[in-house]
Length: 210
Image (cartoon, rainbow, N blue to C red; front, side, top):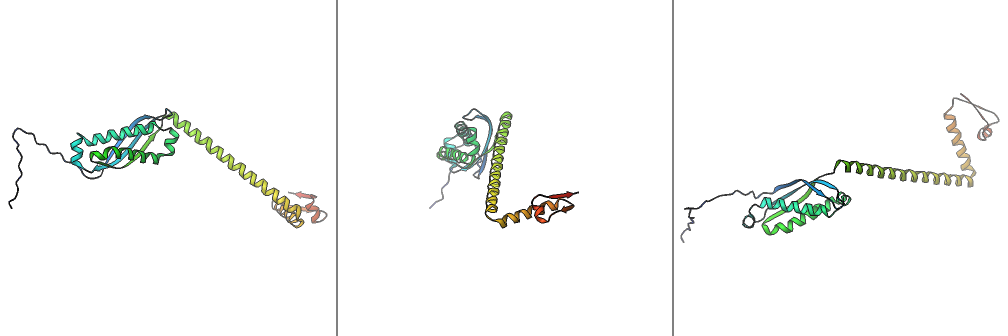
C-alpha cells in the first residue's frame, strides 16, 4: 500500500488561511436603545457565551459567523424587550435570560454555532424614570411600614384587652398589676410620703416630694 500524496494547484489562485478559535468565547451586545411595551426608553446591554460546534458548516453558510451571532442576539433582545412592560422586565429578568437563550440557540444551531448562555448585564433607566421609581418604592415602603405599625397597635390593644379581662376575673392578678405600677412609680422619684398605709397609696392618695 502506497502513501497518498495530496497537492493543490496554486497557479492563478489566491490561497488564504483563517485562524478560528474553537474555545468558548464571549459576545457582548451593548448600548441598545429599546422601548418597552409601555413606551419606556431603556439602554440595555447583554453578554452571551458561545463556541463553534461545526466550524466548517459555520463558514460554509455564513460569511462572518461572529457578526451573524451579534445580529441575532440584537434582534432577539429588541423583540423580547418590546413585548414587555418595565415592571414585567424588572421582575422577571431571569426568565428573560432563558427566553433569549432559547431564541438564539434555535436559530444558530443549524449554522454550526452553539450559544451556551445569555444574560442581561445592564438595564439603564432614563433620569426622570429613576426619580419616579424611587418615589414609588418610597411610597410602597411607607405603606408597608404603616401596615406594620397598625398591626402592632392592634396586637397591643388586643393584649391590653386580654389583660384587663384577666384582672377583671382574677383579683390576685389585679393586685399584682397594682403593685407593678407602684414599683414603676417608685423608680422615678427620690422620696415618697405615705399616709394611711399601702392601701391609700394604691388608691391614689400619694404625696410625692422631689
